[in-house]
Length: 314
Image 1: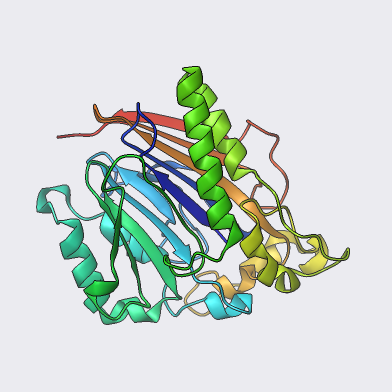
Image 2 (image 1 turned 90 degrees about the horizontal axis):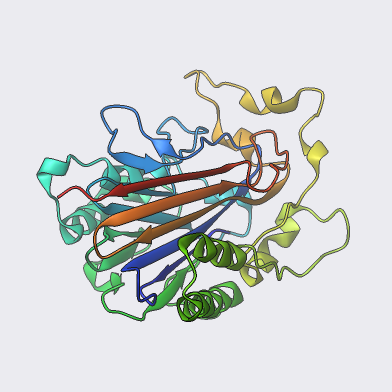
């Protein structure tokens, strides 16, 4: 039950994007870094559980940005598509810079592509840091269902695991309010950038999840995840045989690729927190905090932090 919050409300930043990635904690995931050739201009973490090694959030040296959230299903396995959602994000971020494809052209092609229907339900926020951003879903049937955000100053909007126009999820409404407050308080106090990161991490760490009886499964919590921006560690560590460890989850199919179904059990929660800060002069700060390693072990606060800075190439 991921959440992304987008704001143009800070006077010193043209765009701020913050994101929680909620996932089964044993699902293998890389730390944020510049990708290998031929996509060395892309910065982001990668999902290593599927062959595409897709991402849920990333940015490029040319200023492209993308964030993806999936649709909530009643059961975890229902969210898995024939192909990876991450390839949709990759296709925007890894497009050759010299092609200079517009956001509208990309979205139009994506909506029309049969391949988009073969992945699980998702919403995609994409565009360029200096332009309005599009939000589109593979549940859309035409371009009339595309929403544009970050088109004007002082706008803050949230996106989670439901349609963008669904304003009934508490985590979305709370997230927008808390992000606006954090930005306002930071600007009024004239604090430095590290203080802004701290305030935004506080927003992403807001835990209002209703607690079920001890031992409740992830499936039992699904309907409640819409209430909380942050998801604490849920589920039992022994849902996968601890004697076999992660190796039990890495059973290979006949293509010699790990099966994504093998990672749909065990502990679940907010695994990574990401913050993107973009200034009007083209400077970008990309910060990621890892909360759990691929063995579902808690990472001491701060030791899993990675931060990158660069200027958008013209």
